[in-house]
Length: 400
Image 1 (cartoon, rainbow, N blue to C red):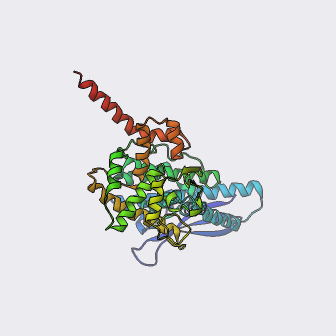
Image 2: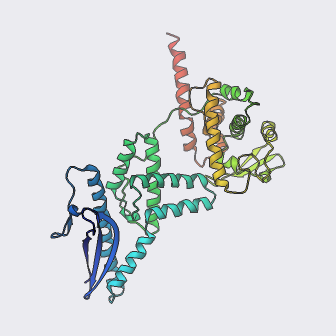
Image 3: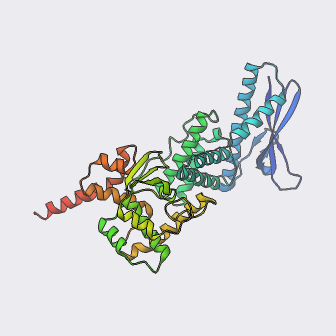
């Protein structure tokens, strides 16, 4: 039977880190597999062939544990390859083992897999989801100090350490949950594609959604925003008008606004497909919407709004546009006496809240927002329900 041995190759420079490598031995034939796993001379015991953990050096201890973890997964994969070759072929060489291992390692890289998924989502037009995968990958890469790993090496212990790292950076629970859910989705996709074993590494970390502060603003604040004279500040005026356009179009998301084309408007009806869900939505074209489009006509492309103004790197223009608009809205919040942050996403919540205040049925609000489930709509309106109860409580208290 073929065997696998872990070896350490010291550096030719005294005190410098050496590298771990594997020997695959079968029928007297020996082949080597190189790795990028580095160990300092004192971290390897040649006699026992084992890693020695550093004393009183927490940071280095974590790095060595990561190396040991990767070595363990490599050895498990090599044993699995050997068993498979024995069952399927019977007659194989150590070179066959090495070749299969290298091919699997190329296919199963977590960083590469997530990049591929982000590119795939972008090609499908799901830009926001693609951006979420990129953001999560960048965060996880920082945690890993840029060291890639196989999808199936994502263990419960590593995920818990990643969560601890995010908490140490003082990120909110919802942000932590966001990263964990995206990472879990990538792992589950890897499992489905045969790139990972389904060991449920996320069962002990936070993946729920914590109730957040109210995002909606009252209609009177939307009206105050609309009445501001911003004619001397073109970029700020555009930001304000894009916020209003979102509110007027039932909380249309910024990415959908950015990629709206002139052909989407026909016979007094605006028709578009949500990039997040693929749902087809139609909106009756109103005068207030027309006024905004006519006010900002400087777009020579096929797009309806002046967010994407050239055909070069449209995705970058969308991201830069969102950043600029949110920056301008943040400054406008103070001008209308608003204490909470003002962003494009507030327009969506505000429309839903205004609809609820008008006692419009939840099913209609849900359809207007383009939600696939009324449960999502109820999350939007949770803060409103609390305010209604508080108002009722004040009326009762006043009777005493």
